[in-house]
Length: 304
Image 1 (cartoon, one colour):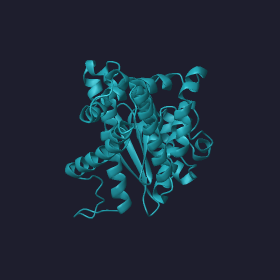
Image 2: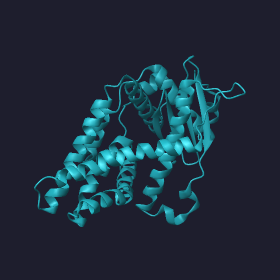
Image 3: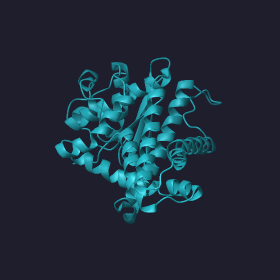
Image 4: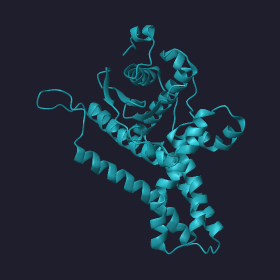
């Protein structure tokens, strides 16, 4: 079986990635679809030790975040139609701008979903470590769900959620062996077992069990443990997602992972055919770059 394809919604578009390449397709204001393709030089493929269970999840997450931010930068520039001194569209933010945006986003996420739940729970009169980590986990999940509900009311985020669903539909169609045609892809589910939304929920649940080993330290130790243990928790969650992706129809596994699948209803909206076309374009480009298309498929032009 070939390596799975992953993806991410961006501003007015979709990013798709495989093991050796990624592509972002964006619908420009004039209606045209712009594409930017990049090769992937994966640290995981170059170093055997980095592919150890749990460890590989940490590196995979880091690579995904880096690619995701680059794809977002490209989509933002196309949406703004920024031109350089030669009159060409500038499709990359500077390294400094990317690092700054990356730092702000990561800092906000850590503060909201890691530090805040721990501090809120520390103010409650809870003596038992077991009760503490369970309540903390419930507070964290509650904040996460409320955050998704609130941002879902933002008009711009609604369109991103539509592209998120379009990404899922295209991958579901590809994995089912169906033609990558808008009308066919549109019939597929907007839910996918390897979704990043589900991954975040699994991170929060797994954190309850990991934090139980560290008791109730002082507030400084509490904050430090929640941040420093995040790579370990993410690595474990990655293994769960990876296993689920290999056994998507297992009834017991689907029952255990059902909350993560339900949660995707908050981050997906039914896409239009135009949005599905963009998702197909990004997926088609990745498959072409990785040599996965048949000769007949290579002749097919995806309508812009």
